[in-house]
Amino acid sequence: MTIERPAADAVMRFDVLDALRGICALVVALYHFQSNGYISSLALVKNGWLFVDYFFVLSGFVIAHSYGTRLANREVSVGRFMGLRMGRIYPLHIAVLLAFIALEMVLVLGGETIAQYVSREAFTGSRSPEGLWQSVFLLQSFGLGEAQGWNIPAWSIAAEIWTYLLFAIVFLAPKRAMLGIAAVLSLGCLAWMTSYSDDLHITFDGGILRCIFGFGIGVLTYHAFRRFGGIGGTAWELAALLATVAFVSFTTRTLTFAAPFVFAAMIFVLASQRGAVSRALGAKPFQLLGLTSYSIYMIHMFAQGRIGEVLQVTGIVDLSVDSMGRTVLQGTPLVSDAITLAMLAIVVAGSFVTYYLVEKPGRDLSRRLLSRPTEARVAQGAA
Image 1 (cartoon, rainbow, N blue to C red):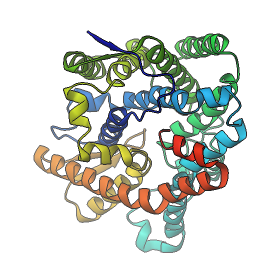
Image 2: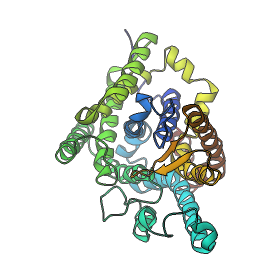
Image 3: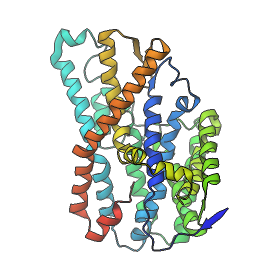
């Protein structure tokens, strides 16, 4: 076992963890695109929803690294921190919402030509006005009313923005008190969720609790990494990665509540970035996936919906949408898999477009408006 304690003043970029976020975003996209093909039958894909908790734990880890000390030392105000986080997530969120609104307007204006392909009226169901205002104000993870939000994956970024605010305040406390508060918040949310749910698949009905739980675990993991050093080397990295894949693939019901702890262990090992897994994930394709991971996550269900509409018109496969908003294909396995791979290619290609046209310009603008020059450089390591 190799132990190395990072220097206290080191400014690190966790490129390996970012690359993993891109891979996790792709698995979440596969989870939302079900079929009778071989890809959808993979146990890892069937439980792919759990990788959202990797995002939460990683966010806690990276935010603690990038902003925890600076918030505690009042080098960055809570207001500036929140402005930077909003600049990171809000432009793309609004852009996708506008795209969904444009689709609803097509239903309104398209008349009978469009109506023959659509089984619902415009601005109804998950696209209701109530869901729209919840999405605009990032409130869809609090279980308010019946609305579920227009872009279903956005429930998690809605939960994250309020979690950022909560922990920005927590970071102001002295270090020992801060760690105690983080632990109490995480375990309190865990207890609350287990009191009303049989598993961790909690989204619109209290997803904020799930986010606080994972984020707090990430904060604690970062401080353990800084205090004790990371466990490096190929053997440890392979063991951590394989254990995580096995857990996600085969866990069920109550055991899913352990997911943030499993992801935290993997992050603790891989954060040292000193093994064969780290070298592989440092390759350019994986780094590009990490770069566009947020775009992949935010646009994938919009893209899948449009792919489904094309398939419905052409009749290549039978298509439906399940109660969770997932596209479901029924065709021969090989055809279904080919369509699934084409979907991934379209989503990845689209993510580069939205990253360079929306996500990056919005983030850069917020940095110019809110950051001092030194803060802007350090903030590049943020999630």
